[in-house]
Length: 174
Length: 79
Image (cartoon, rainbow over all chains, first blue to last red; front, side, top):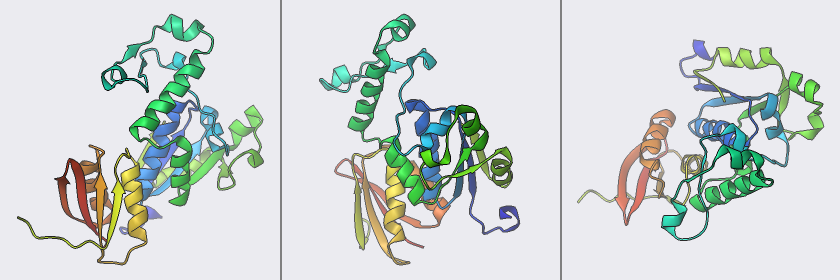
């Protein structure tokens, strides 16, 4: 396949296994940048990454997975916005509504800085012919149906991904 | 002074962060003819190294990379 043809485009094989807002970004950023450079890209969505194939994304920040997470305030004077607010675990874990607040603060900070939304990045990926594969096993376990996902995605298993990854120049597990 | 490069199209990516400048440049250059020049403006400090890498990977030549009025300006020729 690609290895035998020196003129074949480079290939990137990604596994997206996490569904929080902060982890939703890397696969779509890498995939769109690689596709923009003319690479062939496949993303395999598995476990908690699978809901990133839903038409409407609801990726949120989970404070618990990020014990060292500093927070930025997306409003006020620049000096105030540049402060990294330390977030004690006790606060992140126990205050009701903390996750909502953390999610909206991160979204607003990203917007202010000019970072595209996860939806926009996914649209870019689709426009640039990034192939997206949903994990059949995860669908069976968590009870997802193909109709719940964007129509551009395909469904497959480990072998489907590995066949592409075997010929890929870069393989990453996110 | 260096020679003036005549662009066929201008793309302003001011305010956008990675990976949008690279993605927007790709979309713009896809619509252009071989040999035409795209002038791209960006404010992302990551854009200069990224556009060099993009140029090497796609084969579209980076004719010039410079700063102008505090912004990064790239001249890209479609291969």
